[in-house]
Amino acid sequence: MNSSVIQHVEGRAIPVRGNDIDTDRIIPARYLRAITFDGLGEHAFEDDRKSNPDHPFDNPRYQGASILIANDNFGCGSSREHAPQALMRWGICAIVGESFAEIFLGNCTAMGVPCLTASTADIVKIQDAIEADPQREMAVDLKEKKMTFGDIEVNLQIAEGNRLQLIEGAWDATGMLLEGRGAVREVADKLPYVTGF
Image (cartoon, rainbow, N blue to C red; front, side, top):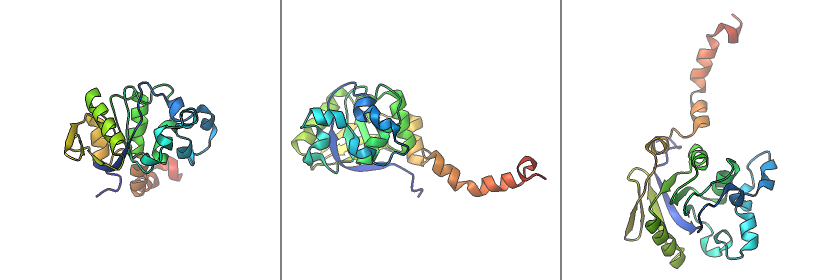
């Protein structure tokens, strides 16, 4: 099985409540100067965490969570790739929300972080369940488009193109290029404008 195939994400979840949480809140603009994405995870939601000591990303009950549960229009604002990078480097492997900003969703998919949607009522139900029991394990199944926790099952939606990229391992463009480097070399060796012959 291709190591970049993503069909199932399991783990504990972290609820981040609020609509229209933009990329500047996810990772403040001052961190855009970084040459690499290394260390961005520790700065995820930094300003929100400073202004709210009860922010979920600082709450010990949610440390180690891998599934983020968000509300409407998550990741709106500027198109910075740093926002999904910060979340991924904090430990987030999948996001379930009411809706996502299109560029944020695309950046997440290109990094192998699935973004799936559920109804407002289901999102509130999930967030309430997590807050009541942060140790509860959850599972996101991309093949079946379902989230389960305990005896509760929630239907999820994801664009079919994004779903296929993830479950077939086609989301990792760099990985795919590296896997095919032998074939690329063979073709390049036959091209006169590359070889000089």
